[in-house]
Amino acid sequence: MLNKLNYINTLKRTILVVDDEYVNREILGAILDDYYNILYAENGDEALKLIQANEKILSAVLLDLLMPVMDGFKLLDVLKDDVRYRTIPIIVLTSEKQAEVDSLRRGAADFITKPYDAPEVIIARVKRIIELSEDRLVIQSTEKDEMTGLFSRSFFYEYASLMDRYHMDREMDAVSVNVDRFHLVNEIYGREFGNQVLLTLSGVIKDFAARNEGIAARGDADDFYMYINRQENYASLERAIYSAMESLSRSVYIKVRIGVYTCPADFQDVENRFDRSRLAANTLRGKFNQTVAYFDNELQHKVFYSERLIHDIHEGIARKQFEVFFQPKYGVEEDEPVLKSAEALIRWRHPEFGMVAPFDFISLFEENGLIQMLDQFVWKETASKIRYWRDKYKVTIPVSVNVSRIDIYDPEIEDKIDGIIEECGLSPEDLHLEITESAYSDNAEQLMSVVQDFRDKGYLIEMDDFGAGYSSLNMLANLPIDILKLDMKFIQEIHTDEKARRMVQLIMDIAKFLKVPVVAEGVEVEEQYRILKDMGCQLIQGYYFSKPLPAGEFEKLIKA
Ligand code: C2E
Ligand code: MG
Ligand code: MG
Image 1 (spheres, rainbow, N blue to C red):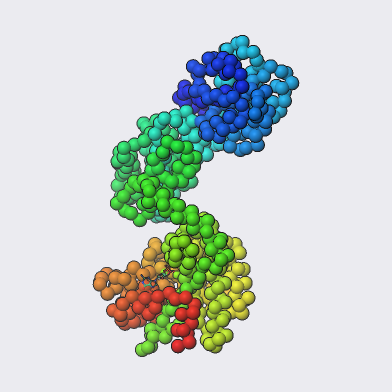
Image 2 (image 1 turned 90 degrees about the vertical axis):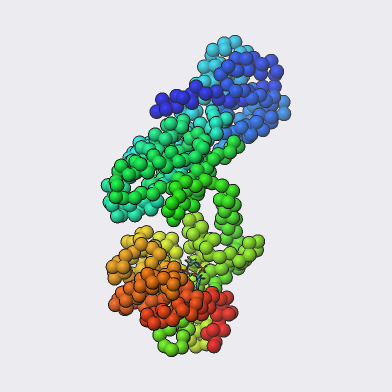
């Protein structure tokens, strides 16, 4: 393993010499200058400032013990207590036996005795201590990914930071590569083929990294990373990947996403850089003719904005900035449309950003494990409103709530929803649960079993955004659902595009055969409404009837 570190072993590391005596600093400097970049400090206080500023590039500190302002013992204690500095080895400079023992006990790695008489001994000691500490850093992480032989992620991060330490002047790119919809490749063509895709890709990546004086790693599943010299562009990598994929199979089209973070000279921690390259890669989702994306200013702003939203959610809930809106669903089977039910939709009145739409925060909160908190708030709020309206107007308007795919993983989800229903004195059929179609392909088994439990208890399940995901029409027959919500994009084209209209008719026919009522979502104009009504669509939700409304406004519809 150490061979891999060979080439960086030839590079000049940076060390810090701390001694209050000018002569001592001069002597050590003269001895070590050929081998190291040397920083100097005259006391513990000055040393600490230099360590703080150079934490990422310091390979060792040579420390005198008796000094004014802050002595060496005090500095040792400070460094030992701080995780950021604990890994920098300290070599103590001393002439007293007792002090040696004391300082070793306080975490020093080794000592050099004064007066300095044997330069070779000093050079050898410093070298050995640095090697030892670097080996320890590297050995702490597992080295290789079994399947591809690329570095594992943790090793890769350690290695990349070492490269930074000795290559401050090199301009680097952090690159993330992943396969678009890899889980589908696995599902459709089998795991065996999926593995071949990964192996082929890893071969190209390894090669590319080596040619650009860099390193490569594999993270989870289809995530790959490279830390390499700054590139003009990534056209040649793109070509290499696609030509390798074509040799693997002429009939299967594999798309990859390449995200690049061009690292500025100041020190960002390595993981952070790769988070950014991954974010850049993620912007390519759904962009079929683009393979490379950079982390740019726009994305930087988005990251700040997202971070703010994540930071602000707790206060937002505590200060009641979140509000549930209700969008009516009308039954259109009779001559006159009738208010049948509604969908609960969250809104955030952010004190700084104004009204924030779910589009900005739902998937963000899903990624960060915050959605459950928010959804529970919506479920509770909705249930208590249903109850309130029932008491006031003696009618029950069932309302559907959105259940995020992440909620499904929560082992307590059933208890939570049951609890809310019970607390409000409602029955399960009053609160419909909307689950988006794409969740069904994510984690089919878990989802099916949770959904089945809910249905057994009497909850109605609405499949949201049907047609936007990947279920096939014949899958529909076996899905445990009670109501189908047609994705908006069909509706938007239904009056202008013959294909969309036929598609909707087909889905409607199948739904009728299965005896599953259909909600058409996003109906905006009269023409769409007419066509859907003629097709036998039972329920309509959309701006044509009403936008999502604050509870007070929605209540007026009930009253009417
Ligand atoms: P969705 O569940 O499919 O909700 C329907 C979306 O379509 C809503 O957007 C609604 O305002 C919008 N819409 C309704 N009629 C029309 C129309 O005629 N034209 C157009 N252009 N749009 C229409 P909204 O409220 O922005 O919500 C977006 C998505 O965010 C929702 O899609 C849902 O997936 C998610 N979401 C909203 N509230 C919650 C929540 O409380 N929890 C969770 N997990 N997700 C939520
Ligand atoms: Mg919905
Ligand atoms: Mg929907």
